[in-house]
Amino acid sequence: MTILMMVFWAAWVMIVYTYCLFPVLLALFARLFSAPSHTEDQEVPEDELPRVAMLVAAYNEAAVITAKLANAWQIDYPADRFQLLIGSDGSNDGTVELLQAVSDSRLRCVFFPRRRGKISVLNDLVRETDADIIVMSDANTMFAPDAIRKLLRHFRDPRVGCVSGELSLEQHGGASGEGLYWKYEGWIKRNESRLGFLIGCNGGIFAMRRDLYRPLPPSTVVEDFVLTMCVLQSGYLVCFAPEAKATEPPCLTARAEMIRKIRIGAGGFQALGLTYALLHPKYGFRAFAYWSHKVLRWLVPMFLLVALGTNAALVGLNFYRLLLLLQLGGALIAARAYTARPGAKLPKWTRPISYFYLMNFALFCGFLRFLFRTQRVTWERAAR
Image 1: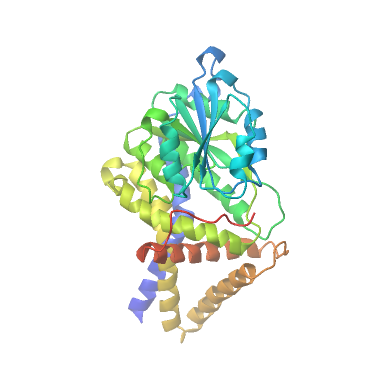
Image 2 (image 1 turned 135 degrees about the vertical axis):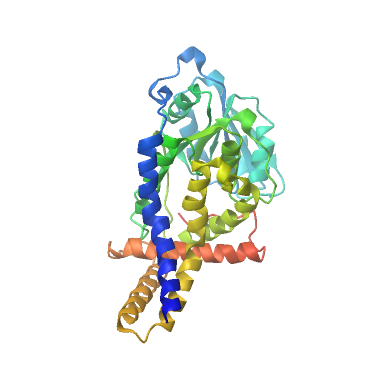
């Protein structure tokens, strides 16, 4: 009985450390050891602005591609130093025809007849430009007019190799707890950035020095994360620029959110095989953050299963019977959110609980997909 109790509490200690203690420790380290850079507070002089290429891999984006083009032309950046490169990844919904109808010297389109996946398109698009800085974006991500200038301010520090902007969800009234979770993630990102090692950029808005881009294997699922870690492994800093803002629509339902989370979960476990070198203690704080922010978080579903199994074995004790009911209650709340109709108004207090359980269920499904190699590099867009 004592061993079961020890295993139960050890599992919950790991969960609490990952979600609660690590962020607090990180904030403390950021306060004690951050090396402030003043470049992010300085606008880049007009005559020093580098050549920039925004890269977008598009698959069946007819519903949003016109809005994306309009948004790109509203970006405050010299036209002679800005290029928009869009690669159509075998689109068959009219995306190609919409792009062919546009006549603008800043736009260059590459139409790939066969669908291969986002990273293959990006690998090819990077070879099509000689810009100093490449900005990664998605077709449904809309930039603030000054977003690129805000990203570029950080590159005045030659130690900086990659910068992530802040992606916010449009207000949509869905049943998701994703917005609250992103605020929590934003706090962690700010502290990682103060130490110079943001663990993973947001694929909708991030920039990197073109000469640091390394083509990734065609099977890579979470290319934004792997590219970020490659930059860190090269010895450059990766920063978070919350002042560089972009928005995209949220998932309409918890079920749609699950589709995306499962894919990200499978991609995360795959990414371990591509970036495991950064787990070595010689990388110091970078390794600490990678272990704590990502690896242990990816393992939380396993900790939850261990906690549930040992809790069930201890059900004969009143205190543990109560804990088991609480765990099962959280799972029921998550199940209710998962089956809710689009636009359903669930009590606000249930959203963090359902999001936590559904996110970890998605991670577990993603692990199974990784284990059995069933996750495809191509994917279907979640309903938004």
